[in-house]
Image (tube, rainbow, N blue to C red; front, side, top):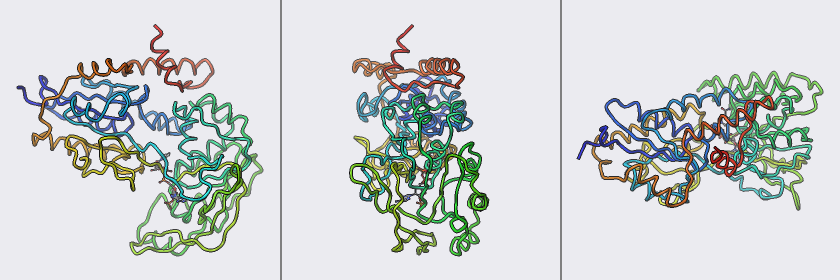
Length: 458
Ligand code: NAP
């Protein structure tokens, strides 16, 4: 039998998930001199790129251009994309085990973290991630309804997802029309009556999770003022001491920007984004639907490890509102046949090797949790692939597997219409052509059946 990893007997690797972490892992495999690999990348959607397509805000088109790097990986000889193939429905973990020497899980974090407070499930209380999926035209979220007749919206959390949600709510139609925002979302936002977006950070301004670029954008909105009180923008003694010990340029820039906003008199624009710190929601109030958010005032306290935590006082207040977006982080979901750590929402792993599951590896958010920007995934994926390569060199991955043709046979028998990368490129062109007719960068397909129909049309 030929040597594993030779042109006669390539190392066969499945990557489940086609977001950044999956593509960086695939690229690093192809970069190994003297190793011949076949990488089959699966996605449950017909479209690749995960959160770059379905999560990155539509007005952040520069960030989306990272897909050009992934296109180069997809053009590698040993690469195949199998879109519209769902793990758990079309293929099982055992199917993957039978067809590949190694499997890299790059499935991300597909749900949101809960607040765990009363009223969280009231009508009008939504996970921010659902709104993000909706305005980005993700097929799973296109039918979601958000009552944009609300005048005041509360966004819980001050991470970059919360910033995206607040900014999209605050932008005018004229600011959004040049983006690839879903057409139905553009129409709905055009009719929006939202006037005030209140963002709640449970700790202080110096602990906000947003980054300066996102905060700076707030100050440049065409028809929205950004409001923060001087008290909220000020640096408290505990945070000042922490920053002295461990300086952080992003925090310093955030504080400078917040200080500027606190000095800026409102200019009377139609909308306002209000940033509030040291406040936690304790209840979402309402009978049939959201009527307000009960918040408690917090103070900072120092934990034994030196970090600063929010500690509730007895001061409460109700912010009347009709819509709430909970933006306190994404969370991974368990997959049949693989271990799962329910507390942290990740596949337990050591340096990317899935615990007690030889031949299986994890990258990205399902490996380490939902943190970091797109670029963070590159070194993270490389580390995992290094573990995989060490196992390959140690002979651990060397066994007989079924071929690519056999895998396609299995999908065919199950009636799965898989979408190739060139199929996706056709969809991509169709989206751009449809957008061009309207003077927009693209008009996204938001329905899987419409995508398949378009591909089946000669
Ligand atoms: P995140 O950055 O982890 O922010 C979560 C926010 O929720 C934090 O402010 C956190 O406060 C708060 N929070 C958590 N539990 C809470 C609770 N029980 N009550 C009140 N507040 C609570 O998460 P994310 O915004 O979902 O973003 C996920 C990742 O994607 C991040 O790494 C982010 O930078 C990245 N991302 C980047 C961009 C971009 O580059 N433009 C855009 C979107 C997302 P504490 O800090 O106190 O825990």
